[in-house]
Image 1 (tube, helix red, strand yellow):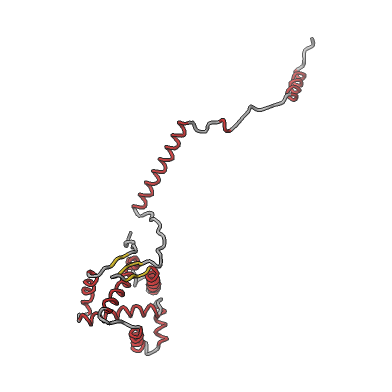
Image 2: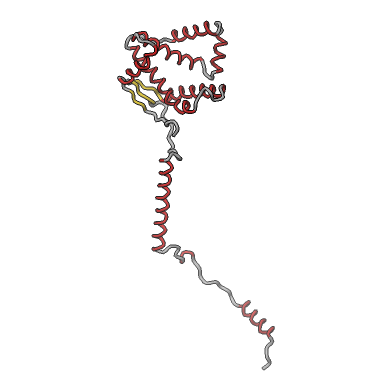
Length: 235
């Protein structure tokens, strides 16, 4: 029997391969157990451990002051403070605070930061509320004695300033107030508070330098509830 050449054998093999139908073994992803019971338990334990470590890290950062929890904006119609039953609404407090920020930021720019310290600006939110509390306390205190500070009183005092310091030139006065980053309304509010102090001094018959001590006693005898939170300076 004649021997077959290698080429002949290769040709026959190629014919067999070509003639046969090549099929891969059956395969299904569902048949591969991604996690057996033991692995699944370990995986859940690992996830829980990572979550706990994450919570510990966040607590540490918040406690050290590196992260600060977010706070929702306060309801403008709710009180920022209640003074002897009278509410100082959040919207009024925020409006006054914004005006004070504008005033002192402008003053800081004009004086290259010499007139306003960082600590003062940090304490400004609390000082702004203190101003409103004082205005409310003095207004109610004087009202009990049938005394009030009217818009006419305020306007007359402003006119005296214009006459004495600005040569009766109201435009010059308003320009000066504008340079301070303030407005006529904001200036009038500050003057109203000064007039309230002046009337209290007259009624109590005390020296101007004794007002602070007298006012401290008034606060101690008043029912004041602060609703807003302040961040301490340097924190």
